[in-house]
Image (cartoon, rainbow, N blue to C red; front, side):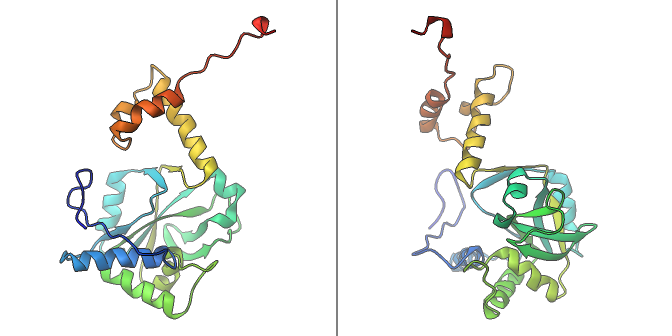
Length: 230
């Protein structure tokens, strides 16, 4: 289906069932673009929907413009949740930005400083994505029963592709209940602080119809005066 008012020009694919993993879901998106007669030679960026990022756009454009770079893996270091729960993440073994290996759901030697996979990938050629997913499925490279795009990077390296790490400045996750509560805590603080430029009303990602409900939920609560309590 074509996009709506919030996503003009988008092609929206509805999947009939849960897929075998992010790699298969991404491939379904590429198929939907092809069915809509939209050429996607590349570059092609695939991302997840349960987090946001703040990053240096100029730095990303420079890396993406380098003709020697075939695949970009977006990552971040020092994430507290990844350090506490390392088996929830993919880990990037790299040397000066060039990726040597991805360890899926198994931490490397130094979780406090090693980069994690965020779930966003940029492919110089869209055809490489299909080729890599096909290779992953052919070798039945499932992890915890799923085909991860993280795992495809190891196939890319085996094929001789130049895979590079792009580090973002900040990673904002709402993929787990704790992540969501943390995000909402800071969102409510920024909205209520008179000296902070953020407001719910100005956030394009918050539907207009949801602003009043969120504002009420985030409304400052005045604690009871202990001296007046019976």
